[in-house]
Image (cartoon, rainbow, N blue to C red; front, side, top):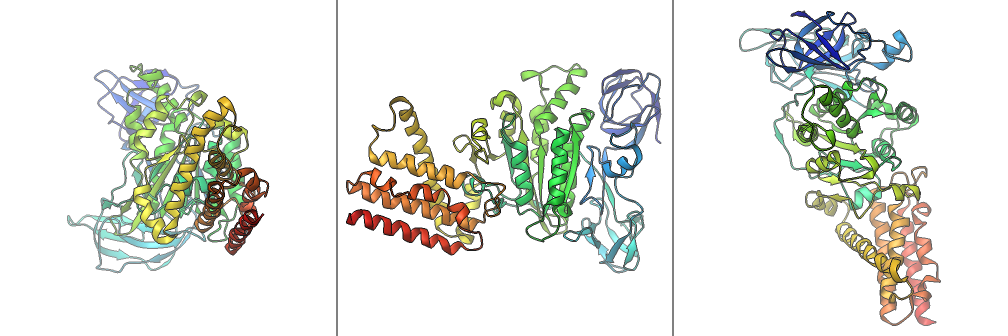
Length: 586
């Protein structure tokens, strides 16, 4: 240990000591006789201030505080996937074996299993020159994910020692590299990295590839790119966690990092149970084999909530550097902001709007700016996509966390409690939500799905906005006085809302819908709208069209057409044409 001092004052998770010359800013420290993990967050001439990431009950003045000489770091290596950590990367399964259902204070367990052996394939030879980020070994971490061991960003040089491929533990030396100064560096299967420092990249790339989620309202109306950032705000019961679970299950990212930041314990247990039972659609293997869970529940120490967000994004960046596309679900950033507010209050800092600290926007930007599609320093491409839930009190989207989050994200999926109560899932309000990725992604949709996809989306969006205006009139004077062309807008919008935007997460063919099916569904709905408009222009009343039952039938086509038999949509087109010919004849 580098130094030792004693506690002067304790205020909840905030501990002060009088000696200030011993510690550096953001240094990781061990506090008290139980060696509670903490971090230096303030240094003045008189005091050093530390926030403790564990429960401080029973801590006393004059207990020792020991510095480590390094920042708050995480261990990066094989064994991260299919594991469950708390906010400071302590493995909860290993801790459970030691202390039972609750984490004992000062529990010190290696983040990764140091006794497990991995089947390692060496990728370099003696005399080879290695640069930062180069892959020198790899091993199968799970049956889905191959773990690639990379030269740390601050190391490089000539290989002067190399082992044969075989079975190794994470701390065994695999390769020895001599740098330009003649210093030898032992490379093992793992490395450490400070959580508040973004991992370096070669350059950022334009976000031109969509993250396919299989959720129609997202993929069609409000898409997000790989490397993008989205906010999911909603009041209590609006379905934030449900939406994030669904995205984690079905989005086409290679790896999912799910951060439960201040969430209820039963919600995290639901994630564990669901993910262990779910089969990954791409590989046919259990979902957990490409998932990392960070569980920082609401009864855990409040200071660790802040660390959990940075721990999650650092793990995501590590797998991005291997060339994977990673999606991180942060549920919820409001709980994280509340932790900032509590710590700020104990530090007696000047509060800003609604008591949040003045640096709330900069902390949010630090997090969301670590998203991106990048060219890594080892010349591979990878991405980190951030989807952050926000829990505004009373569903008030004007509160500081929601408003500041909108500044740093280009996608906003506003959840509506009234839609949730109507069992409309996902409860994303199509009038309040938006995506700024259209310009970047439309060329991809046109090239890979078809030229009509973007045109259909614009038409459907226009119908929904037109319906919203008409409903204001309907509320005042009723729908009977509307002309038939406006009644048609309302009927078609109902088909779009119920038959297209509403989705059934428990239906085998509706829980995930490929883009090709989404396009064909839009095609059928707009074909009905076009044919009906032709009849109305020929002075045929809309009641004649409605009594045919086509509008109701189209609301059920999402169930009637299997995802692997899209030719059935031609039957709908044919049936619509025949029905309208019959109306004209009669």
